Amino acid sequence: MAGNDFLVIAHRGASGYLPEHTLEAKAYAHALGADYIEQDVVATRDNELIVLHDIHLDRVTDVAERFTGRQRENGRYYVRDFDLAEIRSLNVHERRQSDGITAVFPNRFPTTVGKFRVSTLREEIRFIQGMNKSTGRDVGIYTEIKSPAFHKGDGVDISLLTLQLLDDLGYHSKKDPIFVECFDATEMRRIRHELGCQLKLAQLIDDNDSLESDTDYPRLKTRDGLVDIARSVDAIGPNIGHIVNPASVDGRLVSTGLVSMAHELGLLVHPWTFRADQLAPGFKSLLEMIRWFADEIKIDGVFTDFPDIALEAVRTG
Ligand code: CA
View 1 (spheres, rainbow, N blue to C red):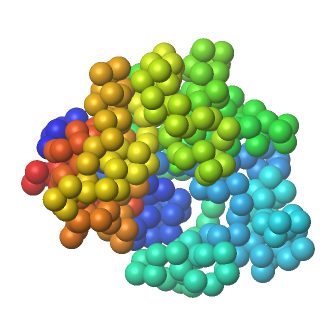
View 2 (view 1 turned 45 degrees about the vertical axis):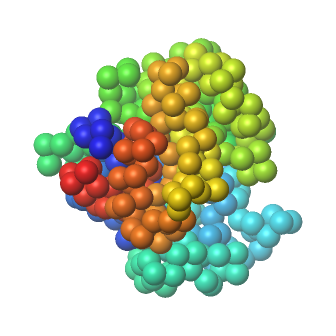
């Protein structure tokens, strides 16, 4: 494997073991030895930045019981409709499906156990920096600005707020242990060229039907699209399905060529999401899967819910 350069990014923390984006999951990711710890950023009604994967609260908190009637017409409880003080009062649990009961990942931490809380972005970063101090390590942060167009439509410039906070907490240049990630390519260009961000940037890539942004992802994955985005970013974060074809040859997956094309343009590739309970076809274990993607597809790191397994793949690869 690529050895020391290969990045193990704890996806929403060590979320394979503890509820995603809780400080407990971040502490465990740090203890397991992750190189980077991810935080997704959403803005509250009073424009506080919190760490949460969705712009909604209902899959991972008890908001529907605590604030019945505060949902929008689509039945969802939006972070933008709640102040930080209200969100702080919620209990966070392991992710559930839309029925509000069934676990998304049935073999993980129970959905009904524990007292977990939502943290602000400032609290989480200072928590990670605190663990860096006490352990003498330098674990990085991988910060995703969620749905900037949605936030802008609601009157808040989430990118500007996030970049100001990161600057305040000591992240200033490409030498610092941080990547800023976003699905919105227009916003990534703005972050680099209008807002003047000097940090390492990672362009996330999804499918157009994901509704993550109005970015044209099929074009982004072409050579012209990559040449264009390479003027703004240092890395891409594609879905695993973008770097290998589902059709296999001799029981193995085949590269789409996206990784080598990105490398030719100087872009790092950090695909998502590597999960022990969601293996790609043909693999018996996450360790085997990560090692194969590192050796054969030449990826530069992984977003994984199970950082210990990725680290073992690096150590023993
Ligand atoms: Ca994310």
